[in-house]
Image 1 (cartoon, rainbow, N blue to C red):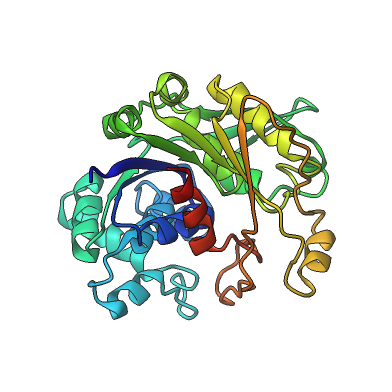
Image 2 (cartoon, rainbow, N blue to C red; image 1 turned 90 degrees about the horizontal axis):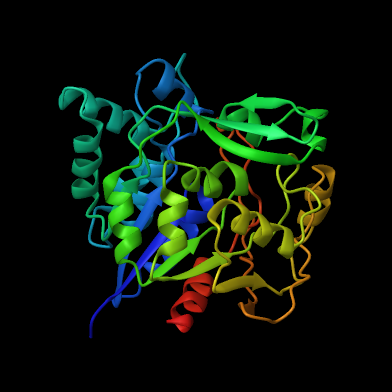
Length: 330
Protein backbone atom coordinates (compact mmCIF):
# COMPACT_ATOMS: atom_id res chain seq x y z
CA UNK A 1 0.00 0.00 0.00
CA UNK A 2 1.32 3.44 -0.94
CA UNK A 3 2.46 5.43 2.07
CA UNK A 4 0.63 8.65 2.90
CA UNK A 5 2.92 11.68 2.81
CA UNK A 6 2.53 13.68 6.01
CA UNK A 7 4.28 16.96 6.81
CA UNK A 8 4.16 18.40 10.33
CA UNK A 9 4.92 22.12 10.66
CA UNK A 10 6.05 23.51 14.00
CA UNK A 11 8.85 23.14 16.49
CA UNK A 12 9.36 22.47 20.18
CA UNK A 13 7.61 20.06 22.50
CA UNK A 14 4.29 19.90 20.66
CA UNK A 15 5.97 18.78 17.46
CA UNK A 16 8.08 16.25 19.37
CA UNK A 17 4.88 14.80 20.86
CA UNK A 18 2.99 14.31 17.61
CA UNK A 19 6.03 12.94 15.76
CA UNK A 20 6.70 10.44 18.54
CA UNK A 21 3.23 8.99 18.02
CA UNK A 22 3.10 9.12 14.23
CA UNK A 23 6.48 7.40 13.90
CA UNK A 24 4.94 4.12 15.06
CA UNK A 25 2.71 3.90 11.96
CA UNK A 26 4.62 2.26 9.13
CA UNK A 27 2.17 3.41 6.43
CA UNK A 28 3.24 7.05 6.84
CA UNK A 29 5.99 8.92 5.00
CA UNK A 30 6.87 11.63 7.54
CA UNK A 31 8.48 15.04 7.11
CA UNK A 32 8.73 17.89 9.59
CA UNK A 33 9.35 21.55 8.82
CA UNK A 34 11.05 23.17 11.80
CA UNK A 35 11.09 26.79 12.98
CA UNK A 36 14.60 28.30 13.10
CA UNK A 37 14.07 31.46 15.19
CA UNK A 38 14.63 30.22 18.76
CA UNK A 39 17.05 32.48 20.65
CA UNK A 40 16.54 31.48 24.28
CA UNK A 41 18.36 29.13 26.64
CA UNK A 42 21.08 27.03 25.02
CA UNK A 43 20.06 28.33 21.59
CA UNK A 44 21.22 31.80 22.60
CA UNK A 45 24.70 30.34 23.11
CA UNK A 46 24.52 28.42 19.82
CA UNK A 47 23.58 31.62 17.98
CA UNK A 48 25.69 34.22 19.80
CA UNK A 49 28.86 32.29 20.61
CA UNK A 50 28.98 29.72 17.80
CA UNK A 51 27.34 31.87 15.13
CA UNK A 52 25.03 29.01 14.10
CA UNK A 53 21.34 28.52 13.53
CA UNK A 54 19.39 27.29 16.59
CA UNK A 55 19.38 23.52 16.98
CA UNK A 56 17.07 22.64 19.90
CA UNK A 57 13.89 22.18 17.85
CA UNK A 58 15.80 20.23 15.21
CA UNK A 59 17.28 18.00 17.91
CA UNK A 60 13.88 17.26 19.44
CA UNK A 61 12.46 16.28 16.05
CA UNK A 62 15.45 14.02 15.36
CA UNK A 63 15.05 12.25 18.70
CA UNK A 64 11.30 11.86 18.11
CA UNK A 65 11.92 10.25 14.72
CA UNK A 66 14.97 8.22 15.75
CA UNK A 67 14.73 4.57 14.79
CA UNK A 68 13.82 2.14 17.57
CA UNK A 69 16.91 0.26 16.47
CA UNK A 70 19.18 3.21 17.26
CA UNK A 71 21.10 3.04 20.51
CA UNK A 72 18.94 4.02 23.51
CA UNK A 73 21.97 5.53 25.24
CA UNK A 74 22.58 7.74 22.20
CA UNK A 75 18.99 9.03 22.28
CA UNK A 76 19.35 9.80 25.99
CA UNK A 77 22.61 11.63 25.33
CA UNK A 78 20.95 13.88 22.77
CA UNK A 79 18.38 15.02 25.33
CA UNK A 80 20.84 15.24 28.24
CA UNK A 81 21.09 18.72 29.76
CA UNK A 82 24.22 19.67 31.73
CA UNK A 83 23.53 20.90 35.26
CA UNK A 84 27.10 21.81 36.26
CA UNK A 85 30.01 23.68 34.79
CA UNK A 86 30.64 27.37 34.19
CA UNK A 87 29.24 28.29 30.78
CA UNK A 88 27.92 24.80 30.05
CA UNK A 89 25.14 24.44 32.63
CA UNK A 90 21.77 24.40 30.85
CA UNK A 91 23.26 23.30 27.52
CA UNK A 92 22.20 20.02 25.94
CA UNK A 93 24.62 17.41 24.64
CA UNK A 94 22.73 17.21 21.35
CA UNK A 95 23.13 20.93 20.64
CA UNK A 96 26.85 20.81 21.40
CA UNK A 97 27.22 17.68 19.27
CA UNK A 98 25.69 19.40 16.25
CA UNK A 99 27.81 22.51 16.82
CA UNK A 100 30.94 20.33 16.83
CA UNK A 101 29.81 18.46 13.72
CA UNK A 102 29.20 21.77 11.91
CA UNK A 103 32.76 22.81 12.75
CA UNK A 104 34.07 19.47 11.44
CA UNK A 105 32.22 20.10 8.15
CA UNK A 106 33.73 23.59 7.91
CA UNK A 107 30.59 25.50 8.80
CA UNK A 108 28.16 23.47 6.68
CA UNK A 109 25.26 23.20 9.11
CA UNK A 110 23.01 21.52 6.54
CA UNK A 111 25.55 18.71 6.21
CA UNK A 112 25.81 18.44 10.02
CA UNK A 113 22.01 18.08 10.28
CA UNK A 114 21.98 15.35 7.63
CA UNK A 115 24.80 13.45 9.34
CA UNK A 116 23.12 13.71 12.74
CA UNK A 117 19.92 12.26 11.24
CA UNK A 118 22.00 9.40 9.83
CA UNK A 119 23.64 8.71 13.19
CA UNK A 120 20.26 8.60 14.97
CA UNK A 121 18.61 6.53 12.25
CA UNK A 122 15.90 9.13 11.71
CA UNK A 123 12.88 7.71 9.89
CA UNK A 124 11.63 10.70 7.94
CA UNK A 125 12.90 14.12 6.86
CA UNK A 126 13.80 16.92 9.26
CA UNK A 127 13.63 20.14 7.24
CA UNK A 128 14.68 23.56 8.59
CA UNK A 129 12.23 26.15 7.24
CA UNK A 130 15.16 28.44 6.39
CA UNK A 131 18.95 28.51 6.57
CA UNK A 132 19.01 32.30 6.92
CA UNK A 133 19.80 33.86 10.29
CA UNK A 134 16.66 35.73 11.26
CA UNK A 135 14.80 36.96 14.34
CA UNK A 136 11.09 37.08 15.12
CA UNK A 137 9.40 40.45 15.58
CA UNK A 138 5.97 40.71 17.20
CA UNK A 139 3.85 43.86 17.02
CA UNK A 140 1.29 44.32 19.79
CA UNK A 141 -2.03 46.16 19.94
CA UNK A 142 -0.39 48.98 21.94
CA UNK A 143 1.98 49.61 19.02
CA UNK A 144 5.07 48.23 20.70
CA UNK A 145 7.34 45.79 18.90
CA UNK A 146 9.33 43.04 20.62
CA UNK A 147 12.38 41.49 18.97
CA UNK A 148 13.37 37.86 19.58
CA UNK A 149 11.53 34.59 20.02
CA UNK A 150 12.49 34.27 23.70
CA UNK A 151 11.19 37.70 24.71
CA UNK A 152 7.96 37.08 22.80
CA UNK A 153 7.60 33.66 24.44
CA UNK A 154 8.26 34.98 27.95
CA UNK A 155 7.16 38.66 27.97
CA UNK A 156 7.30 40.98 30.96
CA UNK A 157 4.11 41.28 33.03
CA UNK A 158 3.11 44.63 31.52
CA UNK A 159 3.64 43.87 27.83
CA UNK A 160 2.19 40.37 28.10
CA UNK A 161 -1.28 41.82 28.69
CA UNK A 162 -1.49 43.05 25.10
CA UNK A 163 -2.45 40.93 22.10
CA UNK A 164 -0.11 40.28 19.19
CA UNK A 165 -1.39 41.90 15.99
CA UNK A 166 1.42 41.00 13.61
CA UNK A 167 4.29 38.52 13.38
CA UNK A 168 7.22 38.81 10.98
CA UNK A 169 10.94 38.12 10.71
CA UNK A 170 13.93 40.40 10.17
CA UNK A 171 15.76 40.44 7.94
CA UNK A 172 13.58 38.95 5.19
CA UNK A 173 14.43 35.26 4.90
CA UNK A 174 14.49 32.87 1.99
CA UNK A 175 12.69 29.56 2.40
CA UNK A 176 14.56 26.26 2.28
CA UNK A 177 13.64 24.66 -1.06
CA UNK A 178 13.18 21.28 0.64
CA UNK A 179 10.37 22.78 2.73
CA UNK A 180 8.49 23.86 -0.39
CA UNK A 181 9.00 20.42 -1.91
CA UNK A 182 7.51 18.47 1.01
CA UNK A 183 4.53 20.85 1.24
CA UNK A 184 3.75 20.39 -2.45
CA UNK A 185 4.03 16.60 -2.21
CA UNK A 186 2.08 16.18 1.04
CA UNK A 187 -1.21 14.35 1.27
CA UNK A 188 -1.70 15.84 4.72
CA UNK A 189 -0.29 19.04 6.28
CA UNK A 190 -0.42 19.31 10.07
CA UNK A 191 -0.03 22.60 11.96
CA UNK A 192 0.65 22.35 15.69
CA UNK A 193 0.40 21.72 18.48
CA UNK A 194 2.87 24.09 20.11
CA UNK A 195 3.41 27.69 21.21
CA UNK A 196 1.29 29.46 18.64
CA UNK A 197 3.31 32.60 17.90
CA UNK A 198 6.78 31.22 18.65
CA UNK A 199 6.74 27.65 17.28
CA UNK A 200 3.91 27.24 14.77
CA UNK A 201 3.32 30.56 13.00
CA UNK A 202 7.04 31.49 12.67
CA UNK A 203 7.24 28.91 9.88
CA UNK A 204 4.48 30.48 7.80
CA UNK A 205 5.91 34.03 7.88
CA UNK A 206 9.02 32.84 6.05
CA UNK A 207 9.05 33.85 2.37
CA UNK A 208 6.18 32.08 0.55
CA UNK A 209 5.52 29.20 2.94
CA UNK A 210 2.00 30.52 3.61
CA UNK A 211 1.31 30.78 -0.12
CA UNK A 212 2.46 27.20 -0.68
CA UNK A 213 0.22 25.89 2.11
CA UNK A 214 -2.71 27.92 0.77
CA UNK A 215 -2.52 26.34 -2.68
CA UNK A 216 -1.30 22.89 -1.59
CA UNK A 217 -3.30 19.87 -2.73
CA UNK A 218 -2.92 18.18 0.66
CA UNK A 219 -5.56 18.45 3.34
CA UNK A 220 -4.77 20.89 6.18
CA UNK A 221 -5.20 19.81 9.81
CA UNK A 222 -4.79 22.17 12.76
CA UNK A 223 -4.14 20.57 16.16
CA UNK A 224 -5.58 22.82 18.84
CA UNK A 225 -3.48 23.61 21.90
CA UNK A 226 -4.69 22.37 25.28
CA UNK A 227 -4.02 25.61 27.16
CA UNK A 228 -3.86 29.34 26.49
CA UNK A 229 -0.59 31.14 27.18
CA UNK A 230 0.02 34.51 28.78
CA UNK A 231 1.57 36.94 26.33
CA UNK A 232 0.49 34.96 23.28
CA UNK A 233 -3.00 33.49 23.39
CA UNK A 234 -4.47 34.67 26.71
CA UNK A 235 -8.26 34.52 26.50
CA UNK A 236 -8.22 32.69 23.16
CA UNK A 237 -11.05 30.32 22.32
CA UNK A 238 -10.72 27.72 19.55
CA UNK A 239 -12.19 30.12 16.98
CA UNK A 240 -9.51 32.73 17.75
CA UNK A 241 -6.75 30.27 16.89
CA UNK A 242 -8.42 29.38 13.60
CA UNK A 243 -9.01 33.02 12.68
CA UNK A 244 -5.29 33.68 13.13
CA UNK A 245 -4.37 30.62 11.04
CA UNK A 246 -6.57 31.91 8.23
CA UNK A 247 -5.13 35.42 8.61
CA UNK A 248 -1.54 34.25 8.10
CA UNK A 249 -2.12 31.45 5.59
CA UNK A 250 -5.20 32.61 3.72
CA UNK A 251 -6.76 29.18 4.09
CA UNK A 252 -9.16 27.68 6.61
CA UNK A 253 -8.05 24.23 7.86
CA UNK A 254 -9.99 21.29 6.44
CA UNK A 255 -9.90 19.61 9.85
CA UNK A 256 -9.35 20.75 13.42
CA UNK A 257 -8.51 18.37 16.24
CA UNK A 258 -9.76 19.51 19.66
CA UNK A 259 -9.34 17.99 23.10
CA UNK A 260 -12.70 17.43 24.80
CA UNK A 261 -11.46 15.90 28.05
CA UNK A 262 -12.03 17.87 31.26
CA UNK A 263 -9.85 15.53 33.27
CA UNK A 264 -6.58 17.30 34.03
CA UNK A 265 -3.86 16.02 36.36
CA UNK A 266 -4.45 17.05 39.98
CA UNK A 267 -3.25 20.54 40.89
CA UNK A 268 -2.09 21.48 37.39
CA UNK A 269 -4.88 23.94 36.57
CA UNK A 270 -4.16 25.87 39.76
CA UNK A 271 -0.54 26.24 38.68
CA UNK A 272 -1.61 27.41 35.22
CA UNK A 273 -4.07 29.89 36.71
CA UNK A 274 -1.20 31.50 38.62
CA UNK A 275 0.43 32.02 35.19
CA UNK A 276 -2.75 33.56 33.72
CA UNK A 277 -3.41 30.49 31.58
CA UNK A 278 -6.48 28.26 31.24
CA UNK A 279 -7.84 25.43 29.09
CA UNK A 280 -8.73 26.56 25.57
CA UNK A 281 -12.51 27.07 25.40
CA UNK A 282 -14.20 25.20 22.55
CA UNK A 283 -16.61 27.55 20.79
CA UNK A 284 -16.59 25.91 17.35
CA UNK A 285 -19.73 24.99 15.44
CA UNK A 286 -19.90 22.36 12.71
CA UNK A 287 -19.75 23.84 9.23
CA UNK A 288 -17.50 23.55 6.21
CA UNK A 289 -14.63 22.48 8.45
CA UNK A 290 -14.58 19.03 10.04
CA UNK A 291 -14.17 19.17 13.83
CA UNK A 292 -12.77 16.10 15.57
CA UNK A 293 -13.12 16.06 19.34
CA UNK A 294 -11.12 13.48 21.30
CA UNK A 295 -9.70 12.94 24.78
CA UNK A 296 -6.08 13.88 24.15
CA UNK A 297 -4.55 14.88 27.50
CA UNK A 298 -1.55 12.94 28.78
CA UNK A 299 -1.83 11.84 32.41
CA UNK A 300 1.84 12.66 32.94
CA UNK A 301 2.93 16.02 34.37
CA UNK A 302 6.22 17.24 32.93
CA UNK A 303 9.07 17.74 35.39
CA UNK A 304 11.88 19.82 33.92
CA UNK A 305 15.53 19.59 35.06
CA UNK A 306 16.77 22.27 37.46
CA UNK A 307 19.30 23.43 34.88
CA UNK A 308 16.51 24.24 32.41
CA UNK A 309 15.67 27.91 32.98
CA UNK A 310 12.96 28.24 30.32
CA UNK A 311 9.21 28.06 30.92
CA UNK A 312 7.83 24.66 29.84
CA UNK A 313 4.36 23.20 29.41
CA UNK A 314 3.34 21.06 32.38
CA UNK A 315 0.57 19.16 30.61
CA UNK A 316 0.83 17.87 27.08
CA UNK A 317 -1.03 15.88 24.48
CA UNK A 318 -0.83 12.12 24.74
CA UNK A 319 1.34 11.20 21.75
CA UNK A 320 -0.40 7.87 21.07
CA UNK A 321 -3.94 9.28 21.28
CA UNK A 322 -2.94 12.25 19.14
CA UNK A 323 -1.34 10.06 16.47
CA UNK A 324 -4.33 7.69 16.38
CA UNK A 325 -6.71 10.62 15.85
CA UNK A 326 -4.60 11.77 12.90
CA UNK A 327 -4.33 8.29 11.40
CA UNK A 328 -8.09 7.77 11.75
CA UNK A 329 -8.56 10.82 9.52
CA UNK A 330 -6.50 9.19 6.78
